[in-house]
Figure 1 (cartoon, rainbow, N blue to C red):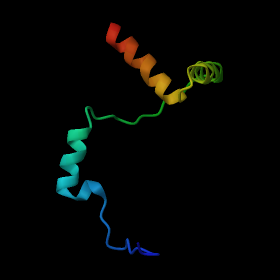
Figure 2 (figure 1 turned 180 degrees about the vertical axis):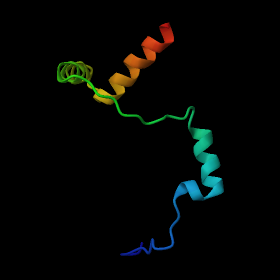
Figure 3 (figure 1 turned 135 degrees about the vertical axis):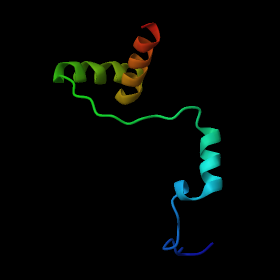
Figure 4 (figure 1 turned 30 degrees about the vertical axis):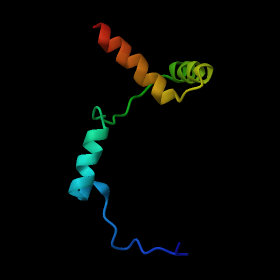
Length: 72
């Protein structure tokens, strides 16, 4: 194994066609990033629920939103 590697000519995976295909195969669905503003009270409650579940608050928020939208 080398002590140093030269990544100066490296490409992002999104620029290499066969890696794009592999990523598409392994991603069951595309996720879109967005920002949301919450009251501090709701945000603290969300973090509290996440801590009790041993999860990240972002994952808990995603699950809550997914459950709600599945019922509408």
